[in-house]
Amino acid sequence: MEELTMVLNMILVVLLSISLQAFSQERYDDLRIDCGASHRTPIGNPDGRVVSWLTDENFTYSGENQLLRYSQNFSTMNSLRYFPDGQKNCYFLPLYLSSSSPSGIKFLLRAGFYYGNYDGLSKPPSFNLEIDGNFWATVTTNSTSNNEPVYHEMIYWIEKGSAQVCLERIGDGIPFISSLEATVMFGDKMYRLMENKTALLLHSRINYGANNTIEQLIHDLDEYNRIWKSKEMPEYLNVVDERIVDNTMSGENYPPWPVMQTAIQAKNVSDSIYLSVNFSTQTTAVAYFVLYFRDPISRYPENSIAQVEIFINSQKLGATDVPPYYRTIITGMFHAVSLYPVQVNGSANVTISPAENSTLPPLLNAMEVFSVVNMPHASKAGYLPNHFVASLFTFLHLLAIIVFGH
Ligand SMILES: *[C@@H]1O[C@H](CO)[C@@H](O)[C@H](O)[C@H]1NC(C)=O
Ligand SMILES: *[C@@H]1O[C@H](CO)[C@@H](O)[C@H](O)[C@H]1NC(C)=O
Ligand SMILES: *[C@@H]1O[C@H](CO)[C@@H](O)[C@H](O)[C@H]1NC(C)=O
Ligand SMILES: *[C@@H]1O[C@H](CO)[C@@H](O)[C@H](O)[C@H]1NC(C)=O
Ligand SMILES: *[C@@H]1O[C@H](CO)[C@@H](O)[C@H](O)[C@H]1NC(C)=O
Ligand SMILES: *[C@@H]1O[C@H](CO)[C@@H](O)[C@H](O)[C@H]1NC(C)=O
Ligand SMILES: *[C@@H]1O[C@H](CO)[C@@H](O)[C@H](O)[C@H]1NC(C)=O
Ligand SMILES: *[C@@H]1O[C@H](CO)[C@@H](O)[C@H](O)[C@H]1NC(C)=O
Ligand SMILES: *[C@@H]1O[C@H](CO)[C@@H](O)[C@H](O)[C@H]1NC(C)=O
Ligand SMILES: *[C@@H]1O[C@H](CO)[C@@H](O)[C@H](O)[C@H]1NC(C)=O
Image 1 (cartoon, rainbow, N blue to C red):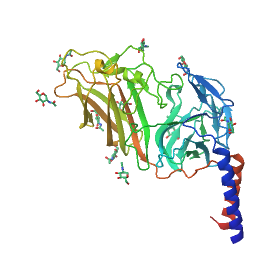
Image 2: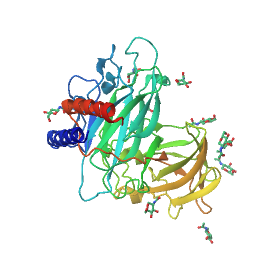
Image 3: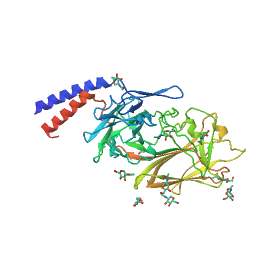
Image 4: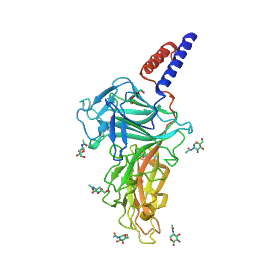
């Protein structure tokens, strides 16, 4: 017994170092995986930068590739990988590693799912998404209204330069995945309240007053690969700064310029803006709100005052002045108000009201809503197994179970 343990241990050590060598060269700070694709898809952006979607050959070792029968608008959604075998199947992501920040680096992680009836069964499955052994989300692919992909996104600490994203069966549905993205978020002004084994699960990120959703597939306007969903609201004025600026605002969370060039504005100085946020679960959760303010148009006579107060479920949680147009056009100035922690249960009412002395109606450019979740387990892997090694690991693991019973 003793000898066998020693031999197995030695084999493991050797395999570890082999896999370390095999995979230490390439680490990504901006990784886009087009799951199930047979070749790399470069997507050119207006600024000439090419975002390359890689195939998944180096990142997972199980499952089958499938092309959808008909192609549609989301090019990376035209292929997927499905996993007919096993309870759990994983992707291994080799990510940027910094020795100067041992506690980890924030990444935006996004998994995309587009069923497209690839199996001809018209039975969109449900399954669980996991990261580093932490529950991430239950993916339900039957709710795709408007034929859109389902995305799950979060901001997460990458601790040891790697993450393991797994799909786990929860019923008879076969898990699949269409895209997987990981983008580094450098900078201490990024979503700074996130710490201590938590992650921010994205609930919504809305660009008010806009009629064009900003996303990487089409534009390359957001350095951090965020999708800002456009939303015009007829009950408010939808105001637009018509200038064309392709840049990032410098300051809290670095929103792209175009996001700050549109807003909804109340029609009357004394009116408020009322928004409702519906969370998917009818249980209590801790939410993290970020609201962005900057006047996209010149509506300023001398000495006017633009100040807003922010209420969530009738509780005043924040206040700010709205930087006027003339002060923001050169400097890219804006104000972001982060509200955390906010206890919510099922839904939340957000009200943007004019402050007592404000002489201009309240406005809002954008709002992000996250829920804060615990992610107690860190990535175990400082290495990534390659295919051969992965199979051997599985074999040795099984052997160990058979021989030692654990
Ligand atoms: C997979 O890894 C090999 C070896 O590092 C590399 O040559 C190849 O380009 C990689 N493929 C993809 C799709 O990244
Ligand atoms: C694809 O885009 C076109 C034009 O933008 C739109 O008319 C069509 O409905 C879209 N198709 C799908 C499947 O979303
Ligand atoms: C989707 O599937 C889930 C779980 O399988 C179920 O609870 C839900 O009602 C379904 N939704 C729709 C719109 O069919
Ligand atoms: C994170 O942990 C540190 C030390 O354990 C503690 O001082 C800090 O308050 C914690 N922060 C949050 C947001 O829980
Ligand atoms: C969308 O907004 C742009 C300006 O941001 C405007 O030129 C265009 O006409 C708008 N399109 C629609 C359909 O409203
Ligand atoms: C603005 O609100 C005030 C007070 O509620 C009201 O008297 C006034 O008629 C409103 N003006 C417009 C243009 O709606
Ligand atoms: C939230 O739910 C309420 C009541 O069901 C509905 O009126 C509102 O439009 C929903 N809001 C969003 C943003 O979906
Ligand atoms: C939000 O406002 C609606 C309508 O005023 C109310 O029915 C609902 O209870 C409010 N929700 C919360 C969480 O306060
Ligand atoms: C949350 O809302 C649900 C449904 O409205 C209710 O049953 C539950 O008691 C609420 N929980 C708390 C802690 O308020
Ligand atoms: C509003 O203006 C009055 C008179 O100038 C001043 O006393 C008060 O402090 C102001 N209130 C706020 C919230 O700034």
